Amino acid sequence: MEKINAVVTGVGGYVPKYILDNDEMSRIVDTTDEWIMERIGVKTRHVLKDEERQGAGTSYLMTKAVQNLLEKTQIDPDTIEGVICATTTPDYLFPSTASLVIGNLGLKNAFGFDMEAACAGFLYAMEVGAGFICSGRNKRIIVCGGDFLTSITNYQDRTTCPIFGDGAGCVLLEGTTEEYGLLDRYMRTDSHYDPLHLEVSGSAVRPTVENIEARRHYLYQEGRTVFKYAVTNMSDAVEIIAKRNNLTNEDIAWIVPHQANVRIETAVARRINVPEEKVMINIDHMANTSGGTLPLCLWEYEPKLKKGDNLIFTAFGAGFTWGASYMKWGYDGSKFSK
Ligand code: UT7
Image 1 (cartoon, rainbow, N blue to C red):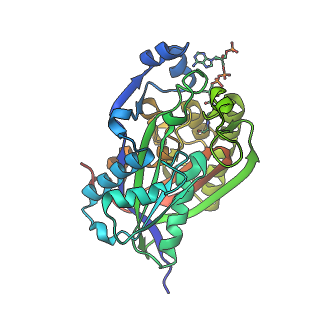
Image 2: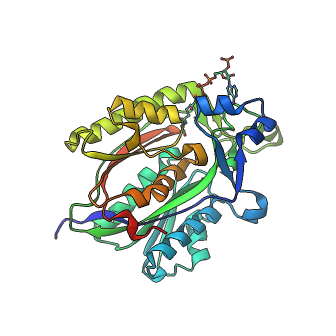
């Protein structure tokens, strides 16, 4: 059998309507636009308000993103065979977000499941989706990444709340025997609970009144520690992938980094000597949407992408979990741009 590569053949995205700017943020916590811009690089973030979501969670964002992909690509929804949703903020532990998305869109021939690898979730989910395609088992898989991160953001903690926003993106993966698509990957996970965790969120710690009152159901982060690990690990991962595939910095068209902090993104670019113009950055108006950052970058930069462009994705999140993927882009971005 000929080798099959999994190639992206469409991109969708969605960000909620409400925009929370730094002036509003500075009325919520003791901060300033100057501090947030200088230390994080976020000007505005999208927030999913109750009026918009009407009882749904991340499935609302992902449904909209997949809807956008289907409209753009005009593919028959009945040909979708699988939906993988990378999220740390599923609507429920069960049923899965994927099953809600499948139901909302009537994807009657698709299986679906959720994946959790924190902010590296989409990177990992793309590889899992690619596995279905490369094995020849499936022809069309949608991989979603997104989070309703403001649902776990502590708006009494000024060191974390300006960082996060809500949004979701998705890609359609199909097979090709040509040398396009996901061509290599490097994925790593180690174990650091303390610097980045959500204590009341699973089977270990009960949602008692005491725990809720202590706000243990909100994301906790030791920013400085996470920052150092993020720069080192993302830079190392990109370097490994570039070297292994003989990609010089001239060969790389785009670095697609997790949008955690603009200083992290530029530090990674500097470490591997790639000019900042080649780094996808949308943190200024999207903030950190966790699983959503990579597909939302693709969604916004899609019109600029050209067939044959070498892209290196990199992400880093709680765990820690990180990695990088090498993708050769398979179509001229104008194909689906609206
Ligand atoms: O997506 C998952 C992975 N996450 C990340 O990669 C995040 C990594 N970490 C970061 O992006 C940064 O560490 C933060 C943005 C979270 C914080 O930036 P920092 O430059 O590391 O600030 P810091 O925590 O070292 O705090 C510096 C100062 C402190 O004051 P003192 O102690 O020096 O007097 C903070 O109290 O800034 C103060 N500060 C603030 N001041 C104004 C912290 N938050 C704020 C704020 N507004 N919002």
